[in-house]
Structure formats: C-alpha cells, structure tokens
Length: 263
Image (cartoon, rainbow, N blue to C red; front, side, top):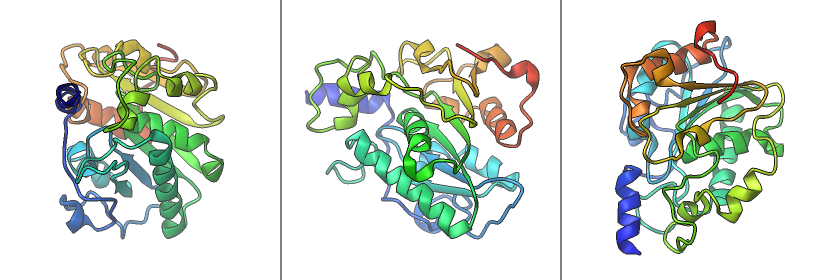
C-alpha cells in the first residue's frame, strides 16, 4: 500500500506547501495572490491546485501572466488529511466545502458579483462541483479545467484503500463517488467553460475522459492548436501556449478556430 501511494505521489507531483493563505509573502511567489487588485472589467480568479499539489508550484507559470493582464488572482491550498504539508488528499466533499468557502470569501472581500475558477486535475473537478453548489449559484463567471479528472482515472485501482488518501480512492474511474458525479451535468447553465487537455497525459486516463460534452463547454487538446507541443499532466500548467490559451479564454479572446464543442 505504501509503495502504491508513493507511486501515485510521484505521478501526481507530490509538492509541499503551507495551508490556505491570502498573503503573497506566505504563499512564496510574489504576485501570485494580488490581494490589493481591482479590475471591474473582469471577475476575480480563484486558483485550485490538484491532488498532492499546492497553489504556489502549480500556478508559478500561469499566475504571473494572468496578473500582467490585470486579472485579480486568489489561491488556496485545500484538502489536508493529517499528513503535514500534503494537500488535496482529503475526502473530496470536504475539499469542495473549502473551495466553496474560499470563493465566497473572495466574493465578499472584493465585492465582485462573480468569480472565475481555474482548476488543475482534481482541482478541475472541484471547480465544476463548486460552480454547481447552492452557495455559488449564479456567482460563477468562467471555469477553466486543465487536465481535469472529471471522470476519475484508470491509474487508480478501484479497490484502493482510502485511509491515507480518501481523494485518491474517490478518483478511481469506477469508484462510487465518480458514479455519483456522473449522474448529473457538471457545467451550470449559462457558464462558459474551457477544458484543456494534453495527449501526453499519463495520470488522468484515458485522456479523452477529461472532456465534457455539455452546453457552454469548449474542449481542446493543446496539440490541436499547437501540434508540436509536448506537455505532461502537470507540465500543461507551465507550457506557454497553454497559458496563453487560458489567458485568452478568460479575457474573451480565444480564437474561434481554436474552439471545439465536444470531445
């Protein structure tokens, strides 16, 4: 069991980071969380990392680019399950409550009418689930899901113990949790969403399971727009072309030739 968890840890980029924060100094990347930002033209953006990850490392490439465009960014680290510094491993419903509460705090602190959500891997799933929550109904502007585990992954055995990582067990493609998720549509009515995947993904498998064939959702392989790009599951967050597509989507400038309506 420990060996399996270690394998998952390495596959999903085990990264250590302190708990949810507002201070850019505490977060460790100047400008990642620009709490004094104000931009009435665009909704504030909440950054949600993936399993075993943290906001600082996950968004170290994307956040500075988005900030340079004037977007107001807020990030949290969620989902601890007792192991010091390890995030995104707790029960997904518990993590969902953290993300929803954090988004509510952003809305309250900024006075914005809506927030946009960017989530990677498990964070992509949480972004859609948070958008569907009663607390955030009508308060979501846009969703960006980068290599999201919207249907779980075949990488995780269906009989994996949930003792050390409840989220890992829930993210197995045939888990009871994922069966429940698949019972209803994920994208709220009226919300524009981008699902961005890479054909080189070996973590959330099969890769095509990351796409969401629902109204308002644009599904895109990075290789469809940039055929020569190689990007891993976590590396997709740091590929300049992917960062550019996310930026353009949030600024309503994604080229029409780039968009695809289904998987």
